[in-house]
Length: 316
Image 1 (cartoon, rainbow, N blue to C red):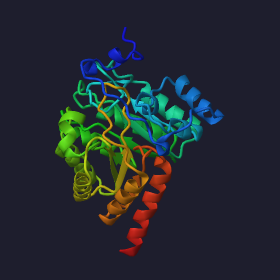
Image 2: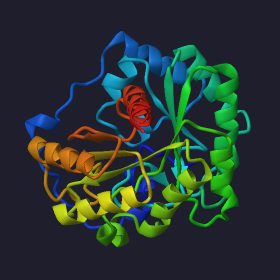
Image 3: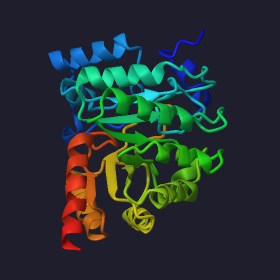
């Protein structure tokens, strides 16, 4: 039985990678350990429903703040990913079979937490013919049944090894936001995201909007992996050409010495410059800061995104 708390068993694909010294974090990126009663209540609800969250599995620095407010990003289809991206702390290996009762448990947790907005993500499931698309759809439908007023954001894999019907299945289930992260600039894909293809991910986002023009689309990248500003600007242009509404940019943090090294810590002023540039290129919503993550403040950001669209329609 694998013990995912042991680094060599959690990340067997990284066992032979050379270790790199982790850089000391600057003051602007430090967070306090979670201790609030709200954090503990959210944790207990998730535990009692036997649910996995990307907050824990990916080691998100915002888990204390988000859970204290009753917010959590549910990670469906297990805790083991079929890919081994060099930046990611989610375990790699052969996943277990899908749990047919999971969509119902997720919906129950959403109802119990009283969420206004929920983010549903997953590991990559290249072992499944549809990449887990139908499981996403079932989860969306279950939440709609149990918590009809909750808005739903999905953060999906790239469905790279699936037919076009996989994306269609997810979009037809009518999430409010379709999110798929590019993660980094195209020149770093061979090392950072070797199992993915930049232009395939870009096309996925474009097709989602083509399938449902009313759908909000969203994507994000990390900085501090070795990219430069010109490359980040090109990613922004590519996403706007794909009609993506919402962009997130956050600082990459190295989970272990075996993971991709941090090239540098990007300053808050640089993040502010990225945000200004992104709005100038036409994004309806931008979140760019050292601690920004795809689902960080997702509910508040969705409300602002929807308001921005309504304002634009009013001007048309």
